[in-house]
Length: 389
Image 1 (cartoon, one colour):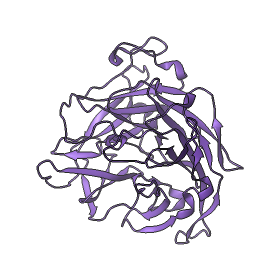
Image 2: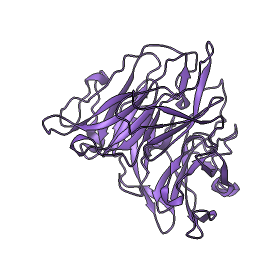
Image 3: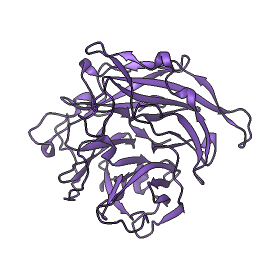
Image 4: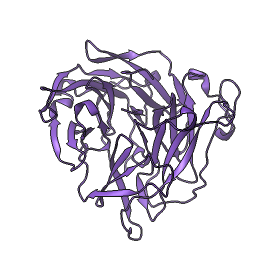
């Protein structure tokens, strides 16, 4: 997880969720290649939809199983690499490459909700925090995990902390419950969706569709001392995770706008987290007409950018936008969307003067680069893993 090298997860239905460490050419501002022809980590395939975060030297995965449990586990990338996972009859009996049992945390939440199964929009959100005070023994990695569908009180917000194991034998992740945001009473069978989220230091911000925007200081040690604050009835103007980059402004959040049914959207935007006001939208961050399509690796059909874009921060004001591409158009009732290519765009933002009130400008745009899933397969998901900024 080197600085300036984004982590990409590709869901291969046969091999699981493969994690690639991408190399970015800083001079040409392009994603040059994966650092290795093999993934640096692999998570087994599970029912339900996963979310990933990188923190504390590990890739942490949260899998939401529609039928039964939410489970957590982490893959320490420095140990075992691609061979960390071994195929087993049951994932609960999986062992790492050194024969140690993999740690799982079944939460025992057994329920069902009136929603579709198996879309990545239903995945929990994983938000790694920066500027977290070290805990006992020096461990300071913290990831906030939150359900993105709020239904009838059956949803969970919790903080995952990397704490030392008693006796000095390494460290492990522990879950601490967090209070639920004050969205008010939901009507019978009403679903509320977390549309956007970000972290400014240790404070977590979320927008819930039709309910408003709320924030919570995740540095509190337990559920009773952590409290949500209602910021307003407005919504953060980006989709999914936004990135707070202190050198671009103390309250500036960089994110990607929502896409329409044709996949147009995902424009890089800047907003003020205190008010939700949009400061700028850069239309040039969407693929240009001659960059917008590539020939699919299977069948020779034209593949275009679709929804499910993601964003990674590379440092020094540089961002990388990942857009999965497909020959299919997204439909509400059609077959599940699969992707046969992925495009990357690296851009650089700067303020043209040292004043914090000066205009934020896109000063450099790299060339569009493309990647195809392993062995030309269709992939249900391709996107960046969230890391702390």
